[in-house]
Image 1 (cartoon, helix red, strand yellow):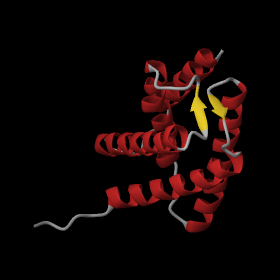
Image 2 (cartoon, one colour):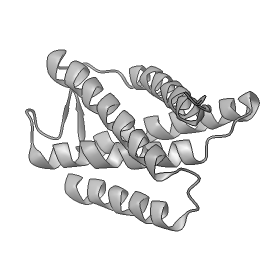
Image 3 (cartoon, one colour):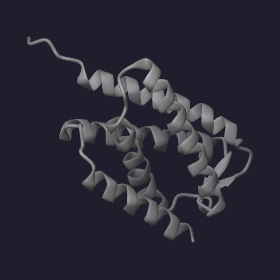
Length: 150
């Protein structure tokens, strides 16, 4: 069931990325993909493997899990950055929506067996998602900052 759940989510996100109007350049898509993927891999390495607070599917590295970690979070990250509003008030509501959505998606992932908690608390995820979303806002603003010619 975990394979159907993750592949279905990846397929839905991929279709969305092909049909929605993207406001990001190819370079922004690429760097956002990398930023999200590195963030996820580091978080899962530290919290999941080193601190052993959760497993993704079964314990230990697996090719399917690596494929999902490199693709699925990045599709969510691109959707997040693509529609992110500039004004702070709108952004705060947007942030709350995405943090709530991410926590709900993680709980659903636990139900389907993708995330197996071994000491991790879901509210820690909310804190992590707040930090990750704020980082992506900074990342996007950094990418869009006009560069002065040399």
